Image 1 (cartoon, one colour):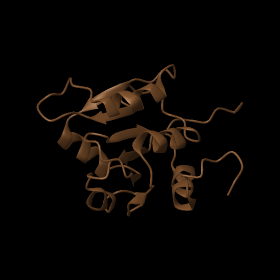
Image 2 (cartoon, helix red, strand yellow; image 1 turned 90 degrees about the vertical axis):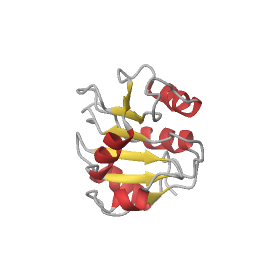
Image 3 (cartoon, rainbow, N blue to C red; image 1 turned 120 degrees about the vertical axis):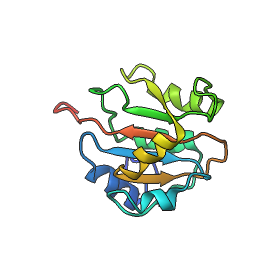
Length: 146
């Protein structure tokens, strides 16, 4: 255990978050996401798992990782197939975590999301069972005063 670090963030996850650089993507996904298949193509090369719901996991990750504020698509959500403008409750809940950060959540079509996942640094799979709880987060910079 470490002081000030959410216990959901285990050693492998902390390693990945620390190793990622500015502009690297992290995929945080639900239990139905093809995490193993996607993660094999990422920089890290294997899926990470956190036993928790998507909101708790996202909150833990965002407590130690800044989101890129230099690009418009730093925080992406997988769009509902056939209804790209629909925002499921689970996505609204996660979206509240980034309110006031200067970052907005943007929709990414399902197969475009998979392509982004393949190019990501790593994939974290959660135990979230609600559909469309799949997010791409681009790492930002840690300022000197942090």
